[in-house]
View 1 (tube, one colour):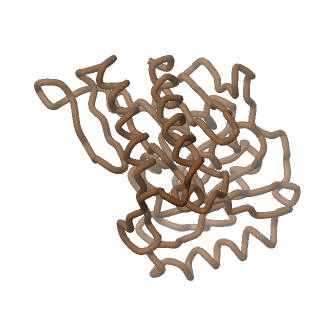
View 2 (tube, helix red, strand yellow):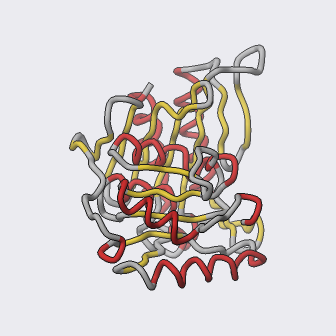
View 3 (cartoon, rainbow, N blue to C red):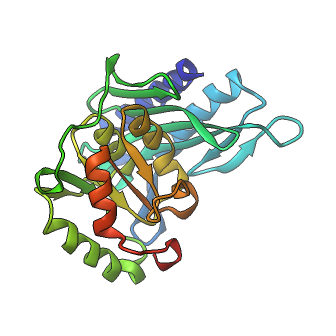
Length: 266
């Protein structure tokens, strides 16, 4: 299954790289405020779906652009592929090379396979539950930093729903005062992969969708990190609230951004 997911991600990456060569003629549509979709998103998603459906016709698919589909004749399956064909579309249409393909496989409620592919740098992050996480065949481990004051933390701020911006800014102020630096690159799937690779020591964001987090969350867990919602529980795919990092930084980051918070508060 991981091999097929890698094939699908690389196929999507080829679509994206072709489009990146001539951004001026790329068709861009606005789904809602500050939320764009391009022909590259649609083409990459269809490429992924074609590969997965051909290999696993009875599996369900949850994709950002086309929604829920598949599941065989019954319409139900224990397996669901969760797909973001181009995470970081705004970066992509500006030629800012921070975007990725994200493919995760959920089996009976657990993410079991993960691929995050950066077509601009040809970096392929993969993981299978219980078998570790890898970057281009090199085993990944989260960073070893012990204290948040030395940590580089990733985040994503609210750019569609400004009703929660003040809450986010409060969190940002608290984190900034306690760590070595905060980065907001604009592609959550790739940010999570960077936590798994030790490039970031931690990450938090709210308002995400399952396809933003599915693959990246497994990468982090298989690299020895921790992932949770703002209650410290496992409901991040449902709530859209995620905090993660190496075990030491994770605990400090969670205490900083969500003291006594409940998911309903954000």
